[in-house]
Length: 283
Ligand SMILES: [Ca+2]
Image (cartoon, rainbow, N blue to C red):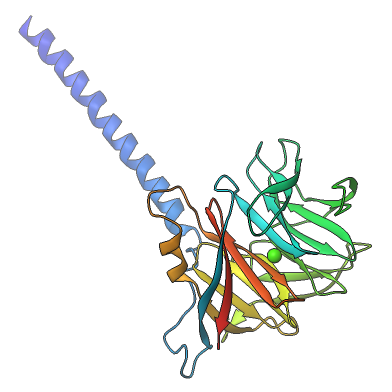
């Protein structure tokens, strides 16, 4: 009887040991695969910023406006007195027209649940909205939000803006592609670099006075980028904005840049942020 018990204890111990070995090897594989993945971008190298490095800009808050805290902001544009906003997530993606001063949504279009909405822009009186991994962009009448058509692209879709002639889109890498707004063919591309270092995760975009302003995903900085070379001309440090967003909320990263050229007003917000900020860049 005793030998039978010892036999079962041995079997149990063997099963336990092999289970532990299996789990450990599984964990090892998991850790190893994460370890081998390309490291996340840690943000701009500001070692020499403001001295010999890329210029670093502060900012001043001009106005604080309400923003829908349920908006997972992926695209932001100012057009004829209104903010146009694209939001993301499957089943929640929208295109909306918003009153800047109140945050009131005056028009909304819901994307089909299979699309994850991304950047938006208005180019030659056509509103364009990208989707994240569906390789599909939608074209709308900016007044009625009527879908006028769609186009496809071979990459992910992240941010989009318009330089007056071409669409400029980001895809999560350091590459910015310039597309003909009628044919959607790539006419040029640049790689975003900061003093020889690649800047990946280029996200929401805005073309402002001959430069491309870009949120760099998961950082609290906006890059000023030359559309000619892709070089970073300056970093805007928006870390201080986070204190106005609230610490106990689900507020996510800074994302969303819009510009009112007539009144030289710059607006920024973030995913699930309860505020839209009008700011001035300090130079
Ligand atoms: Ca924008």
